[in-house]
Length: 431
Image: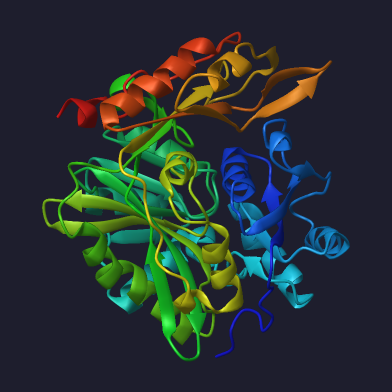
């Protein structure tokens, strides 16, 4: 089985990041601070990314346009951030031009693109996960809800920007969610806290699967404090997890990550890029809630704030089949917390064009930086341009200190209708 690319660039890299959101800003920022990177470009990016990368107005879903841009720039590495271009095969088009790409092929990205496919892979690999029933009719959904019982878990089989899941004890709500989807998975409910564990993955003929886990993080999906209200793309995250069981990363590497990458290779579709395992630490052990095929948002923001080794060798190693030669990532001591500021109406809708104030003041605070997600420029002012607008990241010697820094940054920023949670990492910081 061949490696993703035969050519390994040498010398300082020119890197092109694809995407518009907070994940892409965080990646671009980390690469801009990387001594092994000569230039960072982003397409199309956002006003925050513009501070650390040159922006290019290219449609991230247009594989040929992305590949053409990469060739014009002489890019040594292309990093495809969002899930939609990956599932659409943008990485494949760039890779066919002989340019190293961090991100899975369209076939491998089906681990995120289809939850039913992911369940099939997990079953074949012996990966522990929730029992599930795939449904495409109302009758099938009703029978599955009865079989699995409450609380009901209904997941849109396709991409849904992190908002395709309903967990409810209201059967009518579960049925209504399913009715709005072409195909769903109805699953058993998993008890226990959730953990996000990312891993940089590679494959080569000599070593087989090469998997470098990052440190665990936790995100907060519900819109309101106390995990109330509807699901969102994520309202905040923190790392590390002081309450996580000792040996968790090694266990997940052995029972989830490595078996999955090996099963994908066995199917002839090696997974290279970032494999995101959403986990539930249940009373019966670790179970996989979902897979994503890219860096998660907002967990990426605090994770990269603590990364103490350069990012580019990990991404390039994955892209070129040389990850076995790259040391595992190292982490700074302490903690990092990211708090998302969302626009009015989110997650049901969003408000655009509201002027954002206090960005410069927040950036001047010690141990604080601001990641842009849904922002734009209007008459030289930064304005809201999406549901999740900003992530304010604070770092510190302890989780409490990191949390205090993040919320100091949040307090410095304002825009009409801004909403945020006040309890990100609170329980863990108080333990």
